[in-house]
Image (cartoon, rainbow, N blue to C red; front, side, top):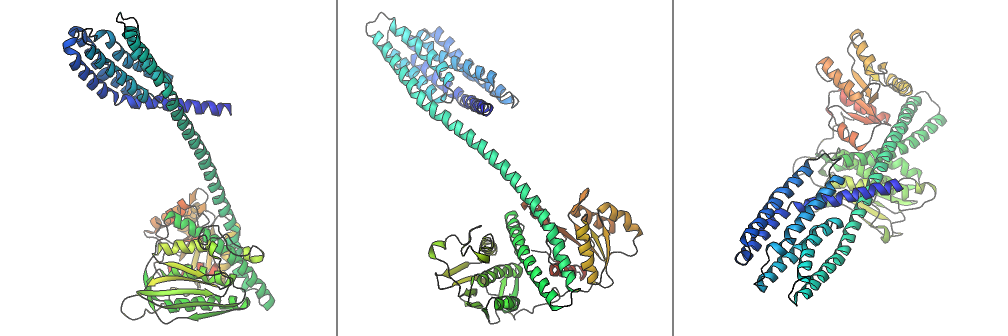
Length: 578
């Protein structure tokens, strides 16, 4: 602790000296102008030869010593800048600054004119006052300038033969005491501000290091967690075709449901990373909202029925313009929330005309949301609802994602809710102008058969390789495995036939999956159908992945998502995953 306090003192002292040198930047101009005005005022009432000698000293000091010293100081290495030698240089310049005005008590003395003596005293007191502010950052420099200015005048008037002048000496001494007293408070406030600043910087640095360490830990934990879940999901899907009895299928359904909940949570965290990285960009298209709502209705109908809830669907055929995939993600979140928190009654998914567009609503007869919680329900890590049972499951990220996605789409989001009266969440979409309702192409969503297709898997995790091989072979594919890019490129020349697809993990020994896929592009002269799979979901990585020209899937990958992406690649469709 003593070492830390000593280091803090040194930092504050260096900053105090640095501030003195900052003031030296403006001092030359002020000093020369002040000296010139004083010389012109006193010229006809003083010894002009002495006045010229003094004026030459003003120019040498303010246009020579001070600028040169400041220049040298700024050119010093950081380790030597504003150190002990700098402090001594600053003190010397302050003594010279004070002395150049203090010697005027004798060099610009005008005994025949009380007016000129008082005018001189006014200039000198003004210089002392300016110094009390200029050198506020470091008290010794203030003293170094103040005493050489005023003490010569105190001595001059104190030993004067004129009877009224000793009283003037007392007044100057009193004024000097006031400046010292006043400077004490200003200096204390300035020094305290510096100490607080460096303490805050110190704490900020500690917090940033802790945050970086925490981010690194969570990134590693996220990757390590996603890896076994990825293999688990692929194996569970493969196992389904080997379990013919109904009870086994029900167990697999429960496993898949649990896996889906974990995947949804991880993908929600991934969505936050993508939004933070600016890697999620909307792709607007024209589509029929009725077909999208119908798809969601069919998907969630059985889940609602299992919970004893009636799920209803109401919509005309309405053409809208939005990002279909992001809108689907928003509606899934809202619909899933409504079903989850409604204990009995109905959940309605509906779309209707609205002035200038189409409003899509998710209404439920659930417990509703008390008014005091209306301000916080869209905040991250805020959950409104029960804390017992599965009501407390989750991290309060769903509605936060909904709000951020709707903001990304420029789509108004709102809700109405009262405690005990259910809730209505809605989004407003722009209606498509003119033309027929779009025909929904199913080609991109159809699953392809991998019969006769050679798939190369590059992954250094044996469990994942086994799971992928088992799954892809179940879809009819011929699978060739490698543990690294080096193994792959050693075997490519001897491989019979060109592979139809490459599935490459991001983390590989000695290189990344991105580098492997880019090498494949150089090897073939064009980028072959290739898919990158990764468990790295840091903001920086997500941002980098968004600029790739080949698709990226994030672990744990749902088997249906994997097969759908393979379909896009093998039929030659361009596709960018959200």
